[in-house]
Image (cartoon, rainbow, N blue to C red; front, side, top):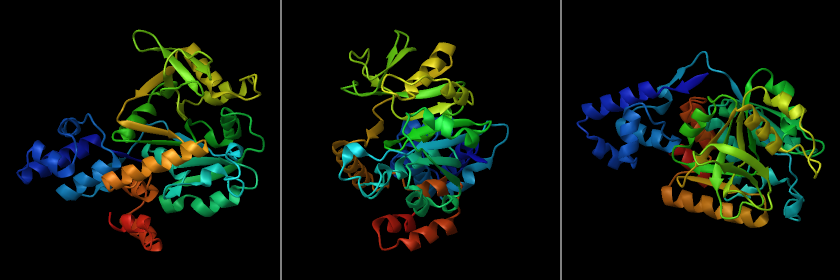
Length: 360
């Protein structure tokens, strides 16, 4: 498996920049990358986003894919997308199609969580789908080979809670670590890839904290005065903080055994909060707070779906960049080559999405 080499990237950027007689300030202005981030990148202390990698490659004249090298000795991490929700709370919108396949602005909702897994360097993905919906997902993604990854599918016959994903995916996970993301969660922001790459290397589990005005409908994490997580409570009547736990989690292999021993909650579900609290009890819980540079969207209702679509539209129009363009990410991560990228663009050249790919 290939991984972005921070050392090779830093050496390449510094070498070409100096050959061209450019200062850091000039390169920062030309690429739109904050100068402080550029300085950190050249010191091997910052992993750029896909968009930033492309900007550097365009200005300095190198292929981002060449910055990836084969890695060894790294624990493999597989990815699971829990996309089994029919979206009954969104009827009649979701009566003809399940929620993860509904469009969010210009692409299906499930593109967004898959984009997160790709940026995390994950190439083995299990998508858990509702009964009678598997063909629709296969028609969309196939086996993942067009993206240079491996996608398999399993059905969740009865919705038993988020933690059930690890029981359904037990054979898929095998001896590896795993990242779980919910099929209606959207994450975006500069530095997201760096954040994900660090999270997958932590011991135990890494979850995220995101500040919201109304935390009542979510799992809520409480911190002590030193910023250490001390409790997680599911949908509390009186939240102890405004930091909620969004639907993105990295776990070591013991998560399967933990999930199998979780008892159903009062609402009859295997709660992910129960899994996280067990890691907290063991002293193996890491919580990374996502700041204002990151956008998290929960497209779980008709209102939030519309709000998410408007946000994605605004970001794309403002930046000129696609959010969750899977083929672009796969190319920048070294999963597919330029010929494969252009083939996808040609197949959709009558669309804005296809033209964007052809312009990369």
